[in-house]
Image (cartoon, rainbow, N blue to C red):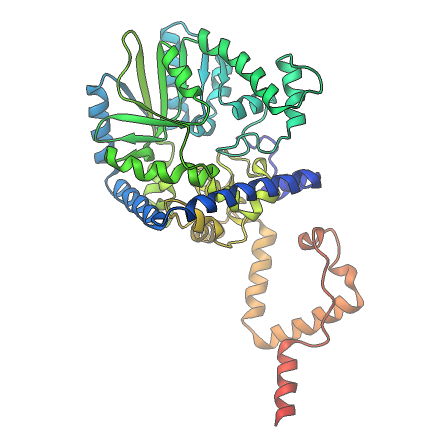
Length: 461
């Protein structure tokens, strides 16, 4: 998602927060999904063992990534898959465009792929005169609304059924005012059926790529990836270099974790294996770096590459739930996006690591045990040291550090603060104070804790 407005997370969150009923509904819906995740986790006595196993498998992958990638490439080629390598988003997009050009294809169907969102593939292909239809229902809704997805698993979680009804009425010809989810789903099904039958090219993402066998696995609940890939003459799969797992037997660990963490389901409806092309068709896989090797070389942040894109950290995050996915102005929102995005452009995404309470809930639910809240804290330090934090915030933190390092100055500041609270509250309760925008400032205490403690101590003596 490109931040075309140039606004920060706080500014974009303020826009989202203007619609209080929507914020409440968004918050409650995502927390309901988090609760479903907890129910599924508690049903498995081995849940924590699965998390630890997945984390250790990913540790092994990141420590031997080049070896596994070469193994995957060799086995995929032996299976008849054509492998391409892309250094960055631009090269990824150019490879896909070239593959379509070579066949004279100007229409493509696409299933969910956050990597293509990261690379802005749809926008690029549109500029080249190629029509791309997203076949995931949520993705199709936001595409028709001319919006980016706000969640990596639930792309249109920010939209209500009535709004979707209006979008379908405008673009798909459904009845005006229709908001029944079953009818809207059937409308989308009829619309997409024609797309599946007529598109000669299909693009999918990759959930897991198995080095041992050269196959890749795609997980969907709608079967749209299968419909597109099996009916097209060319199947293009976009894959980040971190999607590798060593052996097929490891897949069971991740499949048990993925959907339970994402939506609270015991298993994904479709887990489709692609190993070799059908007769008369081609499978191409584009393996993309786009800054991942840089992240791999950053010791404090390399664990972020373990991510399996379940979205559990978003569903539990109090900031994401209240601010909405679009406030993060990056393809992957929420806590995980806030530690991935600064790696791509530290200056552009300097605000995102600060969009967190550091409560640690994201790390607690992560199925592969990424230390998300620790990385958010470390990114803050890096961003400040590199000079990308706002000047006002930097100066305020320096003033606070200076005050807190001096007991005398701290006590004097406290006395002044209490007097201001008591006799000139307007100096604090104003629009320039971000805390005041959403909070009622407390009543000024009569004394500090230190003063109270000393008086109590003297009284006892």
